[in-house]
Length: 372
Image (tube, rainbow, N blue to C red; front, side, top):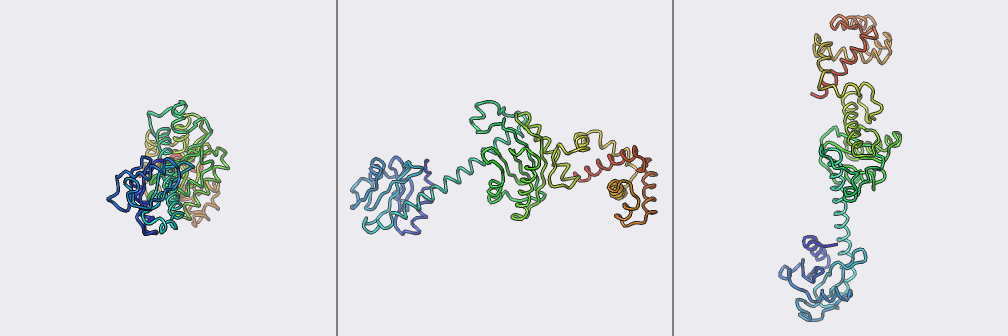
């Protein structure tokens, strides 16, 4: 592990606050790359070179006993059983020897923390690149290619589902939230995710709907309880190729749109969609024309009122009594409103054929209303 001068300077400053002695940090070439004494930065430290060669600590009893040194103690620093640098404390060796243990331990702890942060960042960035190239890029990377698989450490052949989540309120991309999610996803070595301001994209190895639903529900509960955020998920089909992954992503997006805008459910699997599969691709094509043809004579208020009426009518399987009770109106009033819908649209909700036409028209209207 190579230590940057910036990290080294942070380390020596942190240690001096506790030890109250000048601290120097030397790289593998014996150059002082950080010091609490700015005048020494950039100097060659021959004592450090001896430490690197012998892999043993070195006490310097007199200034300039070695070129570029002052009296003090110089210690090898290890990371994963390999020497990576030398740290020195300036002062009479007898006086500063009591700080040797705390000096090495503090330095190695700070280096390990920095390493873990770097690994976390690199993992996060690598997963973002995989998701971007695999799902979002129209000139998509072919992850079946062995070289890409080796570069990204991602085996596309492992069965996964694409999950697309959306936060119902804006939020800052929070490091704490990301760390929580890391703990919540299954099989972290093979499940990857990318967190953005409004969305959460997951490539999950949980392919069985029941298990995946449990996991996503747990994530939703965590996000709500710990961060006060509402999260809705759409889930695509199982994928084992690059092409399948893009298809699953498209399905997840459609399922999310249906769950968020129409069904008002927290999790929607693509295979559980019915009318959504038919309507979603048509919303930018002929569907608005169909809705206008059927409901064109209704005002926006009438559309809203009749939509509520029709949903209740369907929910209670055409029962006038139960529907009227739910809407808190008299049965005769309900009959009058059904007749009014018939008169204004030309379609009778009591007849199966006409009811189907009205249901489709109101579904299209509701989706359009929520997407305005």
